[in-house]
Image 1 (cartoon, rainbow, N blue to C red):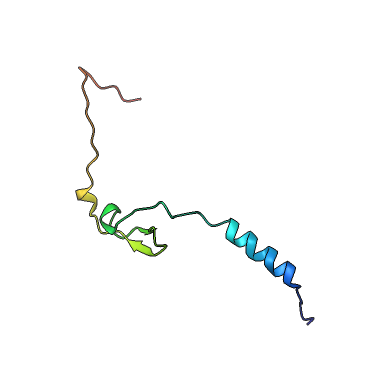
Image 2 (spheres, rainbow, N blue to C red):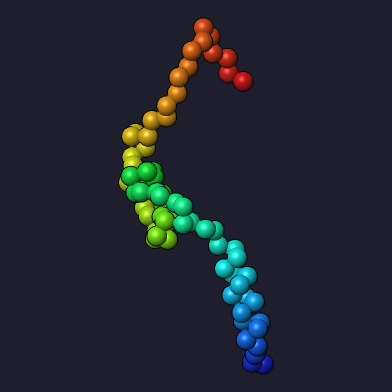
Length: 72
């Protein structure tokens, strides 16, 4: 089997390509209490966070005001 050899420029190009495909998470401020139980996310310090909020604790803020509701 032939041995593959790469130049420094080829390796640098490959590293740049990989880095360009990663998302910038510097503005993320997710806490474990913000995510559903068991779901995994990446926080602002680029650490994996496992959610701690039970599904029963997640309540949307919805206001409905109508005489009748129609399902579409």
